[in-house]
Length: 257
Image (cartoon, helix red, strand yellow):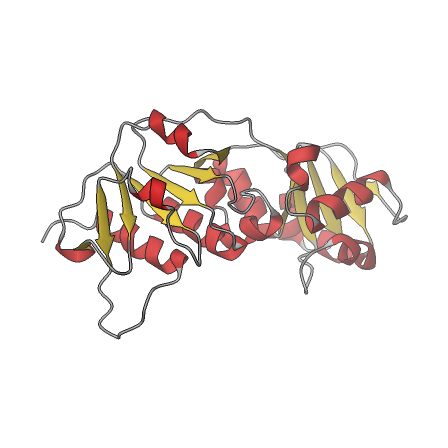
């Protein structure tokens, strides 16, 4: 690690860059870098074997031995007063530590890798939660069609809780890109199809999760080998898409009774 750089001006070029990355969800697409705020995401990044470009810490965080050690893992460290850190943080309670990461190179679709397909899922919290469930249940590829929330946006990163670093992520796809998959597509429906828990599910497969209000598009449903219903004995009309994804992925990996 090089000697830490102390920053005292809010007009410092690094801070101007961080404001854009932290406060504009798709800024990483133009700028080629991602802002990860918080020690949990930093530790997840380090555990994945990937490298950060820069650590940024508040003066108070620098005095915490565990956070100083974590920041020191990065090749370059910037230390700044708490108010300056709060000035670009998108959190109500700024974490005091974060890392700049180069955007991972675009991946090519792996035809036989168990996958989740996101069809215009727009809420960043839902997208991050789905990524977290995918990583937890051994799905290693997430394919995002156009109209889906930006996968590397700060809100999705926070909701994903480090799942990004366990997944192959491909975004900005159109539906025809799914022709590259050689595994069956499965989708859920609130009103038709076999009951999920009564169906023998293929593995590997690609679960299609649709728009929060409109669901999976009609043309994409026609591509699916199975349409399945999640039993809801409580009588609700439908589940939140992130909850539905967790149920479907669990059922895919549940050992046969």
